[in-house]
Every structure is written in C-alpha cells, then in structure tokens.
Length: 207
Image 1 (cartoon, one colour):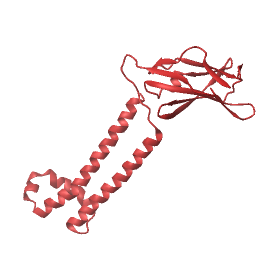
Image 2 (image 1 turned 180 degrees about the horizontal axis):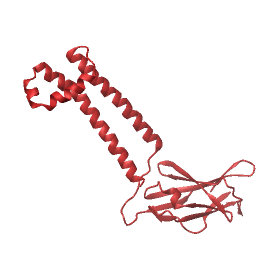
Image 3 (image 1 turned 120 degrees about the horizontal axis):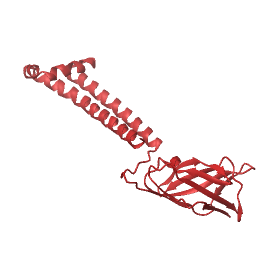
Image 4 (image 1 turned 90 degrees about the vertical axis):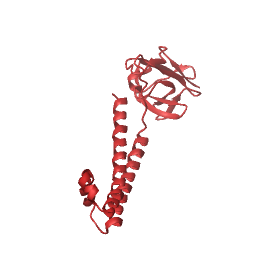
C-alpha cells in the first residue's frame, strides 16, 4: 500500500505566491520510498487532470514550489506523486485518494485563470474558418450585385461610403451593392476585434 504525506504541512498558499515549498513523503508498505529524479506531482480538480510539476528530490522528499503551480487560479485541488522505479515501473502515491491542496485569494483580489492549450487551438481554428466564410460571403455579395468583379472593388467602396455627397448622389443599385458587400466585411472586422480582445485578456492573466 502506497501512502503520501505532507512533510512540512504546507498544503495552502495564496495566489501569486511563488516561494512556498510543498514537501512530500512517500511510503511503500510502511517504509520510506526511494524516490528518483523522475518524480512528478500531478494536479487535478473536480473537472479532471490539469497539469504536472517536476519534483526535485531532497532528503528523499519530493519537493515542488507554488511557483510551479502559478497557472492555477484560486480554488481547491487534489495532488498525487508519480515516480519511476529502478525497474522502470511507474509508482503512484497514494494508492487510494489524493492529497488536498488549496490556493487562496490574495489582497489584490486577482484570482488568475487556467487556459487549456487545446481550447486556444480550437478557438484559433474556429476563428480562421469563420474568417474564410465571411470573406467568401463578401466576395459572393460583390459578384451577385454587379456581376463578375474583383474583391478589390469592395475596398474602393469604403471611399464611396465615406462621402455623404457620393452616397446621396448614388443610384439605388449602388447603395444596395455597398450594403451587401460591406455587411460581411463589417462582421469580419468585429470578429477580428473580438480575437484581439481575447488574446489581450490572456496576456493580462499571465503577467
């Protein structure tokens, strides 16, 4: 039976604290386990696995710091220790359950946020697909309005819209052309602005 205990009692720290050491003692059937340089602490919450942190081994204790967990926001977590034995097998401590870990608020009120790389990749792919759809929509609108025409004509229409005189002097067909072509372009501009704001927020989280 494998057991895992906190050696120094530090199972809590505040968000943005990067100096707290978390020391773990592992036991195999009541005897101290001989840990290796490949020891890792893995962290989960109620939603599932989150991340791992490589542990240093000092006096046969696995040691990580709160700085290695800086991506985790305020909340409650569960940890376990993984190690590779001298025979090349994987040992997981404890055999049953987990050790509890708590990250508390600090005075600034910032609570952080964990961003999953897969989620970011999916977001980028979806944005790329949406951009292509909107560009095609704009191009189709131009073709349907005035026949075969290059998309560069849409750019020229910016100057047309910018002049109240030209707008007032324009024919009904010209106005319809502008509305049909500019709507998808404006939608694309809005989506691009959303993307910029999204990544600005990610930058602020990790500063």
